[in-house]
Image (cartoon, one colour):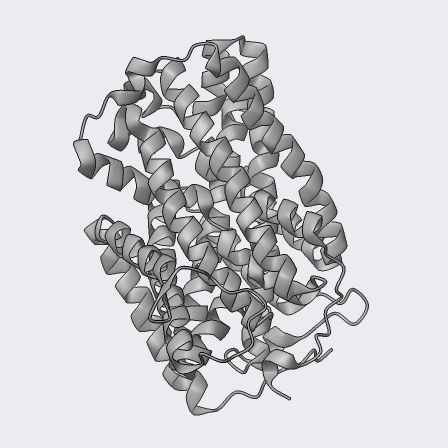
Length: 436
């Protein structure tokens, strides 16, 4: 039996509702609650267009992930797809990039958590940021059911916070402010590259495949629903934010949405939004660590990481070693306190990953046209899905807008991954299938 078809030692408990809410919970978080101010510095009042561009990339690539997840419903996700399409070394490098992305994203969101704590209580940001990865690791270790239960509550709270900002902000809608473009098309693209961080995690939904009932049908539907829900919220938030606070002020605001509510309503309501932002960022870190741990576990199961990463807690049925490793690395980066650099470096890794994933779908369509697919992307030219070309091309455009220093740092990460792959793959790591 192929690795893709092996029985999973993880417990299948998630349905469409659970998986969709988990996806919304992963996607919502620091990107919209914190980086919307930095993005406004580039896009100005046309911030909504940057979110729309990012949404097109996410939607197009989401369809690619949906078809691939239906073909290979396993926790190794993008690393597994790259390996199937391009071989073992590319699979390893993809997994390396995605693990880096998860760690950096969790660290960036933890830093933003500390920023909102600072907005409310004025302590040092770093201790507050350090608590979050540790607490999240404990919840993830306890079990997927407990993790999703917490995520459902937090997701409802954070969605409520965005609804609050939208509701009070729409009363001050300024159509003229929505057309102010200080840097033109270049600024809009640059902001789209930054606000893509707000969608981080959509691709991590497929790591829940081995704990989802009927993953071939459930994962694609849940992914597309989660992207649609979050896009609607993001567009409305962007429109109201620049209507309430001029983009020049928004650009320098450390707690932008809380101050949008303060300006549009009262300080008391703004403080409540800041509290909700704590739950939003906590939820994102929780789900990133949960999905990142399953990515590492899935890679170990395929022999792309050392066997200890594939160990399962026999009582909790959770990947405890992978959970500890991912949360520990996120903690280390969170202590740096620099959300801007961490977020840009994270975006760089995921743009490369999205290019590879879309290319993998095209390659598998050409090489395995008759393979069984529970979900198939429509709109193809000679078997090549148009959405995969759009998704890969859009990722390449956004990649070109990344800061040169970040590009250099990302090249270093790739070279490090290549060096590790030479050592790891030389020894032909044996897959670890749930060793206790």
